[in-house]
Image 1 (cartoon, helix red, strand yellow):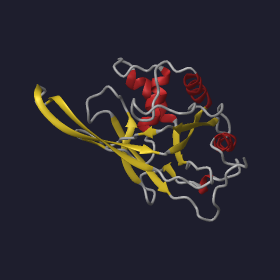
Image 2 (cartoon, rainbow, N blue to C red):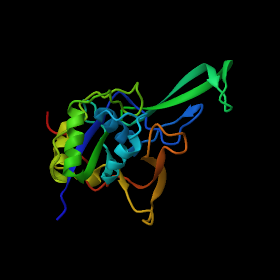
Image 3 (spheres, rainbow, N blue to C red):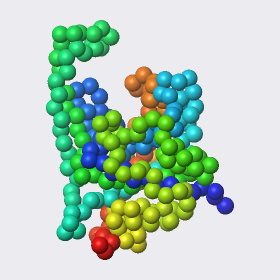
Length: 241
């Protein structure tokens, strides 16, 4: 009999940015939280030092987690669903480091940084009970600051929804926290599932963290996901009031 339990996180804030392929001048965002971003905020809460000698060993423990992300749309006062929007922030940066490693104080480059607005996500983490209890404790009393992908993207609500429990129980708690009735199914929301590489419709993204402090190209391993659009058979309902 499996001893795995589930932990629900709420990722809710004015801005979010979940980059998995953004480098150099254009810093894009995925339309859903990445595994690297989720594990990164957990690592920050737990006080894992990305420059520490044991960082890779500490992060390796999180490979036991299975991650499901769900889009939980905001609603206005008329109970109408708000669409997620994308913001492009334009910058010029002076004083850059060239590929040679030398700093050029006179060079100026243009950069574009993308953010999600009106976005709200639920994350279901499944794994061993002791590990999820440890994560829950860290999120209740984080050692370092946590953010939604980038340091300027602060959470608007507590990340931790409920203590670890059955998937059904923590899913219902997540729904009620976000204004739904608690009876909705996961199929009524857009989801990103972790799947086997051989599964039909699987996409590969490099967002499984190995060591955040490692050189570029050595920080992440591949992960296979499948994006599933919500069922139109039944629309989610807002809780009364």
